[in-house]
Length: 292
Image (cartoon, rainbow, N blue to C red; front, side, top):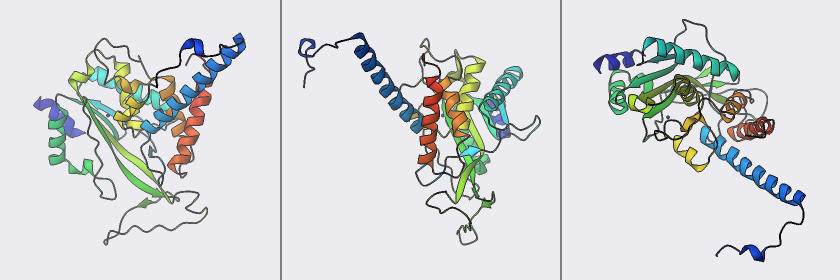
């Protein structure tokens, strides 16, 4: 256990009776009604899915990485490398820039026996992991399952300059171009993601499932508890499923569609506008595959 911890330091009214209803007159009407209900249900699922995976407020753009460099520790060397390779492949498929081999890691997946003990250790030995670049504390969402994940971020103005408060704690922003009512003056950029996974959470999971789950946790700002409000198919449910319960074998079409659209929307648009674009993009993607 000590060895694993040291490795971790190196581096989410009654229903109407049937006979009271007028029956559909034709087969076409039956199909139309069924299709309408299907579309309405899917639209609601997409809405809840996007809401769960993007938690930024209306007054900020969504956070995303400029590029990623994944690292995994806590498993066998071979399996660590397999997960890294898979995370890189997922990011590439989604159009996310991946740094070259040998880069300094900014997406760290750490497998440990007890996440609470590791959190205490990291807070004590590496408090910088819990502060954003403007020195504000990271908002760590409490999770009941075997995973805890968070991001460290900075803010970039429209010219790509890092925003930091002065000695008085004031952050100044100058800008040209569109009004702040149209485009945000800054956007949050992920500088790092930490995903702590307890060993018990990996029982029965394949390398692909672990990697795809970690990728989704790193590349989104998901609030895991919000997933329970919908039933969209996503690899993000794999850590909360029971042994023997059917779960996705890999990243789903919904997951990839979200990542592709989230990393292609205008970066300085406000989150509500970005989410609207993402919802439309996911709907279009799913429409090409009726079985989804």
